Amino acid sequence: MRVELLTVGDELLLGDTINGNAAWLGRRLADHGVDVTRGVVVGDELDLIVEAVTAALGRADAVITTGGLGPTYDDLTRDALAKAAGVGLVRDPALERRLRERVARAGRELQPMALRMADVPEGARVIANPAGSAPGLRVELPGGIVYALPGVPFEMHTIMDETVLPELAEIAGLPAVARRTLRTARMWESVVATRLAEVEALDGVRLAYLPDPAEVKVRITVAGPGAAGRLAAVEARVRDLLGDAVYGAEDESLDRVVHRLLAERAATVATAESLTGGLIGAELTAMPGSSATFAGGMVTYATEAKHRLLGVPADLLAEEGAVHPDVAAAMAAGVRDALNATYGLAVTGVAGPDPQDGRPVGTIYIGVAGPERSLTVVGPKLPVPGAGPESRAVIRRMTVVHALELLRRVLLGLDVTERSGKARPDREDRG
Image (tube, rainbow, N blue to C red):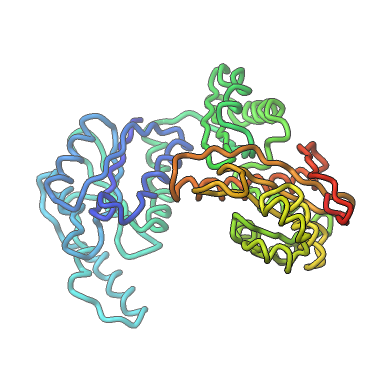
């Protein structure tokens, strides 16, 4: 089955809203073995929507639209589908009743314009929307089927999962498919793909590489008889080829893995951040219950704050500057002691756009102070994807991943690249 996506809305064309619906739909359909062959964005103009739907059905078996089903006069998807089918709009009594009841329960007054959501193209099938007001629609046109879904993401997700995906699978007679996504950190996409070349060559197996800053997710798809059993064997081989770069699977994010490992050891971590400005702390507090393993953090952005709050030696800062491996180690030990944590995790570096202390943009140092030993890792020189705020944001995000991955490796006793700074007689447990 070939499916095209049509997202409707001026806000998408003008960049006011990121087209997250198309991304979600593409992933969801691929996960169910449906080929998405094209994605189109069109503005709130009746004839353009009609033209886009007609053209898509000339190439695909089905079209999924999102947006344009609301109550305002620029919500034109239902009108466009009626025009494409050569029929009129009719008021659906059940939809009208549901709208009135929904508004009454909320204690609001029904606006006449809202009743537009009860109008459907003649002959269309209404798809219930348990998560919102605007229903979905299934319209059969010459050339194929159109599923029109609301643009509100959680409403669209509900209708897609409960109705559209099962119908598409039944229509297409799709083969059994099993999928698994593994997550890796600090390994380039090209390296991941090179290591998995032998898996790519297996019949009935497809790999997709989904890169993020300093991370690559590998989606494994196995189709055909015995897909679930084969998937287990393929996953085991992928894990073997990628080694300890694999930190989790599915929605197991790096911060969740770190929290789990800390909890298993009845340990806590405290953070000291310079260039990331609190991003590591934010990552470690995103998960409910994180207070059990996250002791707290300090954003010591100014050089003086590193000395005053964390006890980084003043002469070290004067001699070497704030961006130095010894500084990262001292920051980690300082925040560990200050917040009475089991581990201290610290980062310092240069996010740009200008060099600092003689270090180029993309230089990072990560310190970990633990109960048994302290160490400093000289992070790899991070790529600078052009000048400006974009590169700064990427470097900061990559630093977060590198820091959490280093802590994961320390907790598991895995190999790390250790680099101590210049020995200093006045240092105590500075790594």
